[in-house]
Amino acid sequence: MVNIRYILIILLFLIFVVFSGCLSQDNSKIESLEKEVQDLKNQIKNIDKQQIEPLPTSSDIISINVTKENNDINKTEEFIKTDYTYETNDINETSIIQQYLYVSSEMKTPRYWGEGRYELTNFKVKIINQQNTPVSIRSQVISDNQILEEESFTLMKAASSYEFYNKKKYFINNTDVILRLHIQSYKPIDYQFKIVRNFG
Image (cartoon, rainbow, N blue to C red):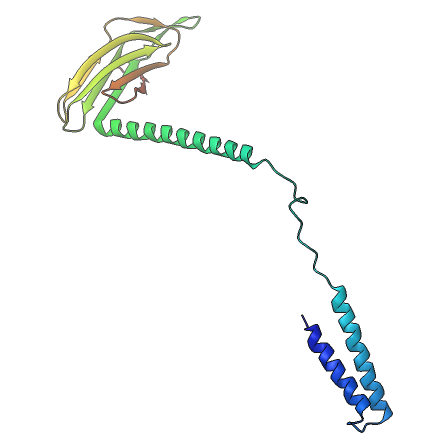
């Protein structure tokens, strides 16, 4: 912005020079000088009219309840962290078990007896230790949340294996049969039985 004091000093100096007669100029030059002085005065008035709008005071600002929103955000962050950690643990445990073991679970195509009734005649499970550390396992064959058979064993070293077959025939309501392995302190892991026609 132009310094108003500086402009006023220039104006006063010009007026003083004009009226003091120091400059010998004709009337036309004096008129043009007076016109310039008038323009400068108008500019000063315009500068005075330009005002910056004041910032709103605290009373003009609408108050917002930030505490509640922050609490909601914190709860959301906690939920996301907890959910993410849970998924990560599951992924880690699954990958550890896959490194530990080779698991094969197969069943012969169940016989259909009608009205949602099947006869499970044959299944077999084979588990091989893939690391040179002992692994204790409790296995369950489950259909409709009912345990059909259960086996507990320990694989002592790498390449040691355990294999078992069904001890009897079972009538089940569907072909959704799973093998659930409880492996030491890890969470149980489920394997879906693969249906095979050529069961050997």
